[in-house]
Length: 238
Image (cartoon, rainbow, N blue to C red; front, side, top):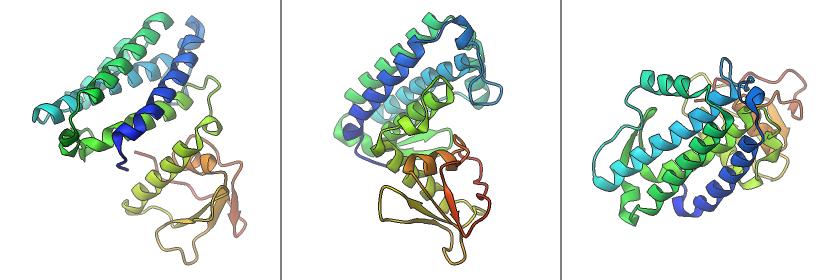
């Protein structure tokens, strides 16, 4: 989803401050405790947030200078960097996330209006530079939940939950094999569909729960299905 990157920056700043407050609360035991992501500790998640922020800085720099710079040298290098930083002290993890966020904000501020139209090489494929701020916001909010440290999808701002839900539904619509769904957020009158709506189950509930369920961050316990039955299993997100 591409939105005006400068309009989204205040949301990124607020999301980052919430994340930093959570990171500040972690002691040695908590930092090494399990996250919601299989095989990753909270230290892994915080390191990933910092390194992914730096990857965005690299792509923004490429958009500004006219170079096609990859955010990560390779997937293997990305994984190695995360593993290398995961066992640092809580203070080191916090400083890394804070300093990476500052570099990201500086990179956004350095962009001229025309720079946002450039194409950048994201690890998932070429995307417009203007999409990077939304992707950073999404990264911070979703991985904050992944810390399993008290922040949940219900804590997401409503604007983020709505944007995330539309983003995920658009992605599912482009993926062959996605289950047909009709999604009915409780906070609005607009239904969203994946695939052909005829005979598709209708899943209804709070917008944050719909979005969280589709990306595997909630079990969908607050959702209802019509006709009665089990919730469909969404495909793995990203």
